[in-house]
Length: 365
Ligand SMILES: C[S@@+](CC[C@H](N)C(=O)[O-])C[C@H]1O[C@@H](n2cnc3c(N)ncnc32)[C@H](O)[C@@H]1O
Image (tube, rainbow, N blue to C red):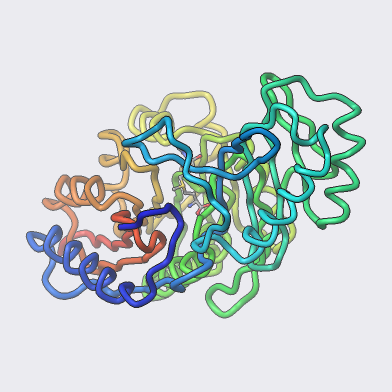
């Protein structure tokens, strides 16, 4: 949809959103009639993270991206209008610092930005050389001056100056929540749309009779914590150690006392659930829960066959998906036992063909 990556086209936004919604409606027509509920994005500065190559041409350095069709030709990125205002501000300031300080510039090849609505920011600079105290000595004052967390990476090396995370503040379901987001782990890319998604999930959960919730793929707890107010107890699992660490922190700082987080893959959990075997799953005292609902937000591949069979055993399935194709396949597989009762589009990725969807499935009569 764009010539240079990261551009915005606000006058085309509504038409693109309508087309995405129509596509979702048509894909799910065999299972559901009606229009999906649509949640729009801001039309600019909506992406909270960005990743650029750093390109050197003689004395000049610039941020770059690549067109996959022409991978040898860097596209200069003087700005990134889809990115948050903080990313754009930092791109400029960082480039100034890189030009002024050879120690920052030498063999630097990538820069990653993670920012928040609350104004917090973390920058990771990635190098083709070993970093040492000399790098620290110039990077540390830069981090202080720009009020950012700064990490230097190179092969087998990670130098964290002060911190490896940002703290985001989101308004969800009528309350403010704080979420620690740690470098190099999953974070929702579009914070405003994320607020809509989690609020939507809470609204659906509020319509269900209260019981216990099982969540798979819980990440840093973005959905887990707000959803926990609508259930008696929550058991949430996630494969990434770093995300589990963030989720534990987030439970504590948000004062939540009815959530248990387990580090486990969805596949292992589902298999353990089916067979009643597996060391970790026995730690969770599954018979003590009265599960009424399962919530899943899987990666693009959707649910594996064992996990489809696991979710089938629940009265209600709440599903957030970044890939409507695998969502559709999973909904189709569940059709004989569950009926699709809600379908929503969350426009996390304006000006791209990517779509994020929400669905509720209810056990048939
Ligand atoms: C789309 S993200 C959702 C995260 C969470 N809902 C959030 O908003 O922060 C998917 C999550 O699944 C985790 N994941 C990936 N593969 C997994 C697997 N096989 N089993 C369990 N979790 C997995 C990832 O680490 C990531 O945190």
